[in-house]
Length: 399
Image 1 (cartoon, helix red, strand yellow):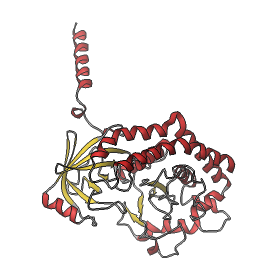
Image 2: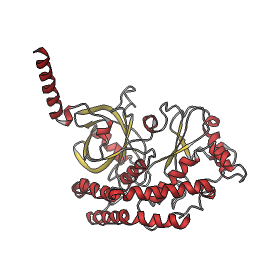
Image 3: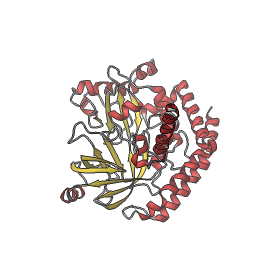
C-alpha cells in the first residue's frame, strides 16, 4: 500500500514539473541560446549612465547595469559599446561582462555575452545561419539566438545573443582546461599572412591577447611570429614545420566551410585576413583558428571555390599541398551535401525569417527597410537552392 501511494505521489510531482511554465523551471545556457525561440532581454541602468553609454558610443567605457531574462536577473553587470563597422549611436552594439564588479558572478555559466545589433545585415540572418552551419559541419562556433532588447523599457529592436569567444567558450568546444593563449585578430591593414619580420611589435597590434595577457611579449607572440615565418618559408619540409605551429587539417576544413558559405570578410575576404580568433593550448606551439563574425556570408551562389585563394599566403600554400587540397575538396563536397540534405539550409532560412519577421517590422532603429529584408530573404533562399549544386560541379571539375 505504501509503495502504491509513493508511486502516485511521484507521478503527481512529475506531472506538475512537466506542466510548469518554462520560466519557473531551472534555466540553462542552452535555453538562453535556443535558436528556435525569440527571447526577450532587458537592461536596466541609471539614466545618466545610459546617456553616457549613448554619447560615448565610440569608446569601450563600461557602465553599471542589471540584465534580466525570464525570471533571472544579473545585478551590477558591466555594459559597454562594441563593434567595428557595426558600431553606431542609433542602435548600440553591446557587450555584457557579468563578473566585472562582482568577481564570482556568472549568468548561466557565462562570464561575458555579446548583444549583436545586426546593423549591417538587412536580413538579420547571415551571421546566425553561418554559425549554425559551422557547427553542423563539426567546427567550433558560437551559439546564437534572436532577442527583443529593451533598455530602460525602451524597445531597441531585434538583436542576437551571441556566445562570446572567451574561457567559457574554450572549455565548451576547444580545450577543457582553457588554460592556453587566446588572441582576437584585429584588422589593422591589408595583411595576407605575410611574414612581418622578427620584431614582435609587428604582431601585437594584430593579435590582442584575451587570456594570460600579463605574460611577456616573448611568451605570447614569439609562437605567432614563428608561425608566419614558417608559413612563408621554403617548400622542403613545409607541412611538418607549419603543422607544428597550426593544425593544418583543421584549418583546411575551416577555409572550406568559409568557401562554401561565400564569405566576403573572413580569413581570405575582400579586406584580406579578418574576423577570427587564434588559440594555442598551454604547453603547445600549435594554434587553431576559431570563427567569428560571419555577417558577410551567403553573398554569391556562383562564387568560385578558389576565389581569392592566391592572395593569402597560408591558404595558397595549403591548397598547393596535394593531401590538403583533397581534404579541401572533400570538405566542400560534404558542405554541399549537408546543406542540401532534406533542404536543411533553405528550411533554416525560412524558419528564421518566420521567427523574426514581425520584430524586424517593429524595429525602428534598424538601418534597412522592410522591403530590403524581404528581398534579402529571397536572395538567401535562392542561395540555399543553388549553391550546393554549383559547388558540387566545381569540386568535380577540380578533382
